[in-house]
Length: 290
Image (cartoon, rainbow, N blue to C red; front, side, top):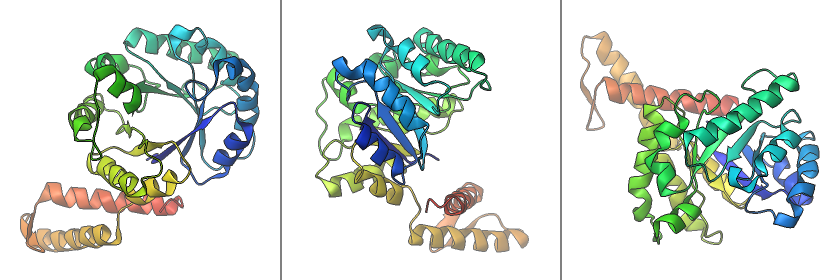
């Protein structure tokens, strides 16, 4: 699971280098909104250099949207130079996604990379994209997951979310359902935009995990450890899961598959969920991500 996705502007090399040195799962170098138009072309070379330098996590780039005419140039400058993945903004139809998929595939072929080396992450950030998300991502093997961009989404939909973001709940549920229906990984949730509200960020990250997302976009380095903490099971959760697994396996050995553990009914779905939580915690700990 890729929990933390930290944006950093492509035209600030020092900030890019700093981001790549942090304990973050994915650094999202931003050639789109965070990069001034006059500096986009020049920033490509700096991004290429940064991706080939030292880093701790994966290196992804948010390229410019297809209507800008810059997407192909962005990809040409980056595919084959340490790029792990591409985030594609303003995507609203499957044809556009497959156009970018073909661009990447051709660059992989020309530059001797195995097909599918570069991930492609559609950013769902309009009502039209959300309404059509399944057809957008369907059949594109390069897409393993997609992400939710709430800033443009709220602008498009005329939404003004409150501190608990209740207004976004139905749309998040639609994204989760679409990802499951298309057999994709859980999506990446939108960023918490009020950087100084640490308590709000904690609640937002916990909410994202509770809804089933695998990670969250971050717009400041201080948000990364908050996301990591929220997306790793607490000691209490691990203890509860361990109790469930031990008690259920003992009961199952005696012929029972429905028991009470700490006053809660446990059957196979609850047992499997506890097993999964423990397995995910072990994998994260083995990877040094706990």
